[in-house]
Length: 458
Image (cartoon, rainbow, N blue to C red; front, side, top):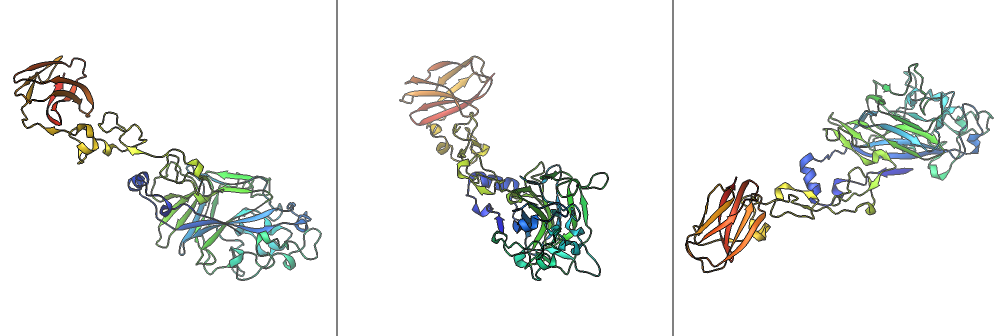
């Protein structure tokens, strides 16, 4: 038996800025209704099985897999589906085995008596738990892991007709260790007290009602994909309510399998959630939750949210996929703290003169770390607004070297000039004709002291 578990969870993520940003922006699904997908190796065929020619031949060393949806106790599986946003697919690198005489597309249509004929029990099919017809006078069987089956087996060995030969000891008696418990001891079918109703299937039959997919008997195939597929009922739990694993498919092939599944689950409170293999156009809709392990093979990639290549669509980590470290910062080139190395833009990080999100601009933008001059009336500017020339008239001498600077509205330094020692009443003419129209800050500084006046350039 092979277990493919969800190895990517919120608890395993690093506490990165990017993760927290998306956590609060979009929210994060903490639902645990869907816990896992389990692939069970149900049976491995041998030469004895391949000797049967009734209803097509199952190749030697074909593997029969069973796929289970593993849910939290108390939850019900209501639907397996594909739609325009989330395609349903099952495929293999070799054709799937179907019994051409007694095979069924949906396991709930099997007559239990037929499962003892030739290799019918290895047929490939779909289901929502149920593995036999529901009859008022007989038992209705549901799929369960062989290790959890409580009532032995009714197929294989002495329960089998031996096929076309017929084989003296019956068919399906191979006890290959890779398949776990032998089918003659446990058939992975058991009964339940509560039987679901309201079955509905769509997307496998043609206009004449015939199934020509990989599950039908009309043609062989290795892939089934659909955006219209639906298989649903009133809601089904697992045979074992504590483990709560519901069988959804049996696949027999000599090759490897792959799939992308979408399921609808009802929790113990009656709320319904859709779990999908891949994000679609509705990925941010409420109740749509992407789970990497609904894909097989599970996609691997960068699962470290501190890197640009990160995606929560990956279910296993490939450290070589993480290439570009994320650097959050201000990417506005007009800000005084523009960071050319940042590749994650956080607009609230940006600082401009007079606007620094309640932070100390002298810390964020050290170049602006100046103090007001003792006299706030050190100089005057005119005309204001200005056209081509600004006139600067000083009111008093500072006894220090003076420098003037002009900043635009974003705090970027536009013009700077040392004018030396100034005397009271001195006048300076400054050409501003090349400046674009807008609001500017004129700063006169002496050492680390400064005085500023805003002006407008027409």
